[in-house]
Length: 457
Ligand SMILES: Cc1cc2nc3c(=O)[nH]c(=O)nc-3n(C[C@H](O)[C@H](O)[C@H](O)COP(=O)(O)OP(=O)(O)OC[C@H]3O[C@@H](n4cnc5c(N)ncnc54)[C@H](O)[C@@H]3O)c2cc1C
Image 1 (cartoon, rainbow, N blue to C red):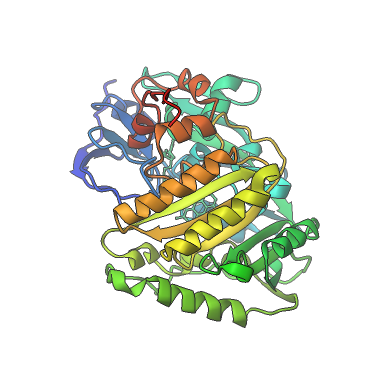
Image 2 (tube, protein in one colour):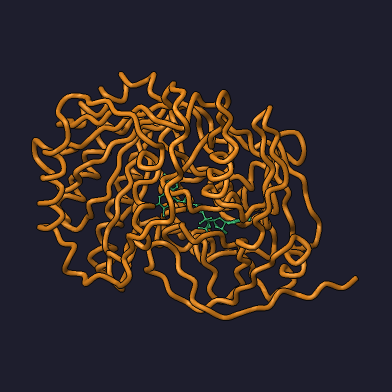
């Protein structure tokens, strides 16, 4: 039986930072059988989930994007064991809605790991091996993945798990869409006492205080800090530390947050976000936080997904878009590197309100190119102001590289081949598992040959 190839359109798909714009061919298969036909499209090919990656790792100008949102079927849910099998275009929001609807009084299941937005697909979560506020206790998304089905451009479907095709499994987790199209995945959920959260916010004054709070919060499953990245001098690194855990309560589950009415309908004028407005806002926000831990019980949505409450918040950065910078530096070098990063950001006076600091844990990441390593990660948004922004980002890269750290591909749109290859030494092994017809804008940039500078300059 011959299958028609899904209809192809030409458009400018965006990633979350909206700083990259180029025409792509786009196909959207509705069934796995259409997906096989879609892979016969003109290459290079790249899967595209919800476009919640910030830079160019989900973009492929000159090639074809395979949009996965039509592959959104729920295949099975073993309520006893907490195991789900879903197609790769199912979103974490879909899974949470289903878990809500099926919650039994005595048994609740939850995502084992979730990033800071629920509007990502399972395929996207695997391909970036995403991490969440519980990295120190649960590792990455891929650590809870039991198996996946991968469609290659030669038409074969490979079952991958720790026991079957383990190398391809490890390459696909964190494989930024380059090993083939994930059709479906089997995921182990986590039992939780309820869908309510016990939460504490604590205002802290310095990086030492941040480390002390991280150390004394071992029995809190989720930790993260908002950091005032425009504070300098004796205020360097000050912020608000949030810790949370699932609450033991027999209250009925909180109602799921409905699609929000709050949205940013237009691109904001770029003068709105500048060093003075953000600096003033940060200071106010920090001072208003409780100086002593204040405990509350609330729904999980504001804890995990505060930004999802405002649809299209990325338009606040105006037409030119923005860059998110996220790096991790090894624990041993964090003492010098994190202050150096924060000082560089504060001096640039360009960072936005959105900046977070988190200690990552020791659990080994399952993917060859997984981003996390034991250490400290810093993530912050920078409005795209052209050369000035790139100069600051290059400086941050240099500090990260000198500390033996690396940047997060899910957030990146401009790192050099040299810095990527230094940060991910397994990249050549990974490349052996790539599908020969898959590529991305990100990959073409970071896998380019690096010419070593022998002049010593
Ligand atoms: C507000 C916000 C908060 C975030 N917080 C975090 C966080 O806390 N932690 C974190 O780790 N990340 C975080 N992210 C990043 C986000 O989780 C990742 O970029 C995620 O991969 C996006 O998923 P997506 O479905 O939108 O995929 P896309 O962005 O469309 O694609 C991401 C990658 O997945 C590949 N891909 C997509 N589907 C498939 C498939 N079926 N088969 C093979 N490859 C596929 C693509 O080719 C691409 O390389 C955040 C993003 C936002 C916007």
